Length: 158
Image (cartoon, rainbow, N blue to C red; front, side, top):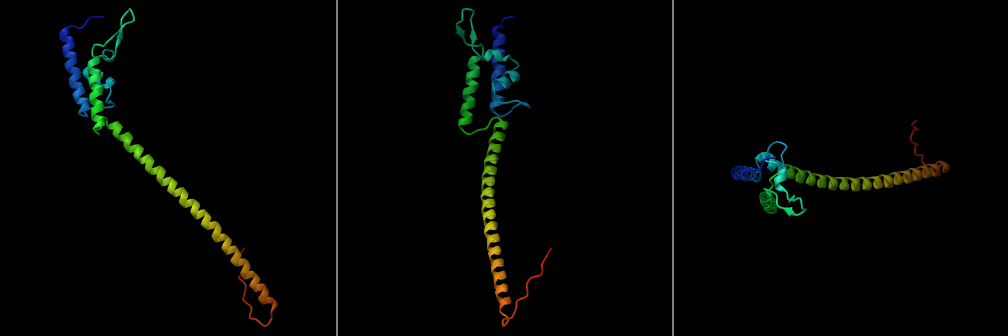
């Protein structure tokens, strides 16, 4: 693998900074995100330069563009802390989470309303049954007394 010249490194760093500015301004490619993978793709460099490396002796050394990755992460964090939404997917996720919360509240309210209506139905049916029994009792009582006017009973419905 060929080593990069200082000119190539400078050109790549300039491309990374330009891509970083575009991403942080919200100019993302289709299916891109505000992350290092998209940054590397937009700058046309490999992602491996953003991460630390290991020497043959096991010692760690910084990646070629690790300082730019740290700057990108820091700037992205500052924008998010300020309330800016760089990635439209993040805004969509936030919006969908709010909708889910609202729908959960509506479902809870509906469940409570259904429980109240079910309880009301039971009470209403019980009252109607009690009234029907009282009416039948009074009709029977009237039928036993011949001197009283009889109330006609309701026709039987099949």
